[in-house]
Image 1 (cartoon, rainbow, N blue to C red):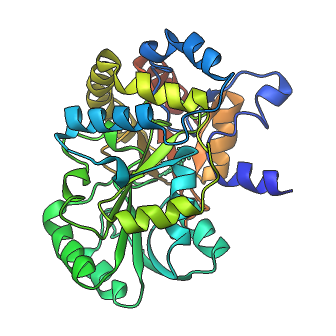
Image 2: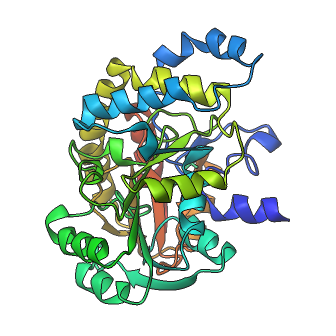
Length: 361
Ligand SMILES: Cc1ncc(COP(=O)(O)O)c(C=O)c1O
């Protein structure tokens, strides 16, 4: 029963109508880098296999060094080991961060786990709605923050693809820092966004800030389950660590991260691909008559508002042609007029646009 709930409320369910029925589907519902597993990790897979015969280093020193080196190289950031929390995917990190609060402001529509985890831990929940262009309403966030201990928001946000505007967000950061509030910024998709979109450079100045990252999306490894969090509030990190099981990251997660972070070629080609593919795909979508609005995006998915058809109808039509899309009706603040598409490689995007062109309303 629980499994049904999980599968139906997230993207990536290529099992129910696909694999379990012996049918291959193209997944436009979950947002994973189409380049797949980075070569640098693939080449070292036997090292991970060897390592499976022993317990991982319980301090994960090599892994933490790799994270520090990665952010030093790409964000020009110096991160101490004590600032890092390791998790089984971004999900475990989000779970721990949310569990450390008593009340939370969730900006919606957003990743539905924020609300589910907050309910699971019994937090008082407030919501701030994105504006009509699916951007953050900074004034509303600041007003509502007065009643909650923490704030969670995506950078970029899922399903809307919008980024935090640092100039407008600064007042919120300053307020949280001076009032002992906490900000959880989920950057699971940030590597797909333009350079310098991350808030990471601010963690050393703001103890209120906790950044969540993962290799899941950008390094194409959702099955590996590796994510991490970074904050200069070492006491907050220590308290979250106390709730974790030892060896929570297995040797495949450890090796996947160590070698993927070193794969400069993969990182560069992925960045080039997404900057080219966003305008191509969005232009194609904007020509379709049954689409009311294509929201601007900074990442590898796009939110769509439909007209003359609802999400269920489009889902069924796409499924018949072998494509799975994400209906967005269960994101708080959206309804079945909204769907979300992943952005894939050119060949699949072309095929998908052709399917959409022939959709009859
Ligand atoms: C915004 C966002 N954050 C976090 C996650 C969870 O990531 P992980 O698979 O690394 O647990 C997802 C998964 O869809 C997501 O969309």
